[in-house]
Length: 295
View 1 (tube, rainbow, N blue to C red):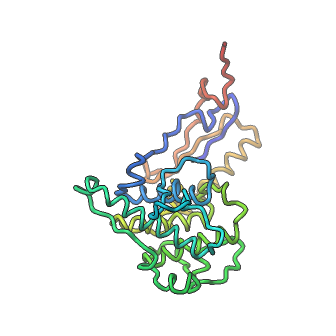
View 2 (cartoon, rainbow, N blue to C red):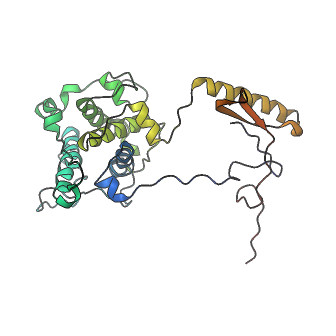
């Protein structure tokens, strides 16, 4: 749709209340996912945030290792003498293997649910364990680091195998530490960050595999993670043209002919475009109205 915002004359973007983003119970995300979106939320808001975001934020991921006597309280902390491959593989085994085993110990949870399968790197990528990750070290000369580019994966609409998802995850993990180390600790998931989308897609797919949920392509996962309704190129072109038409009216100060135009998915009365007169501002809008509060 195209709208024209004129202070005091037409409504602004915030005049209409926005739908509240859907949220999911923490226990569903951490322990009993049943849909792919649950895996995406886990990968984006727990795993990605834990590894690359603010370390002081609360996080529901289990950080305790199998070895209770370990002096390290948080398995996500990297050892001083630990190389990047070892660190990545240890995190992989913890979140996709050990944490699933811990969840399986609660028999009550799985009485009426499909039991998940722990996934360990030795099973999905045995060559990575033997060669310490060097089996797929590839040069990456792209301006923007990309695990897909490094591994020669070119089709974002292809559904990767478990092994391919594992390679993408480990490669993305390494690229964050090798190419974007200064950003670690301050990163927030962004749907336009290619490396972040690759990492989240791969992590969500590995978790989905554990819980018997169908895997998705990077294109589909990006849509779920970024709440994107994929716009077709022609729709974008139509809207761009309508924007220019309204911009010309603005330049000519032709206020009476401003229109808010919707591009419809299905024709209504044989029309795909529905122009309407712009709505008036919402007097209680906290952005465009001058609302006074007496204290």
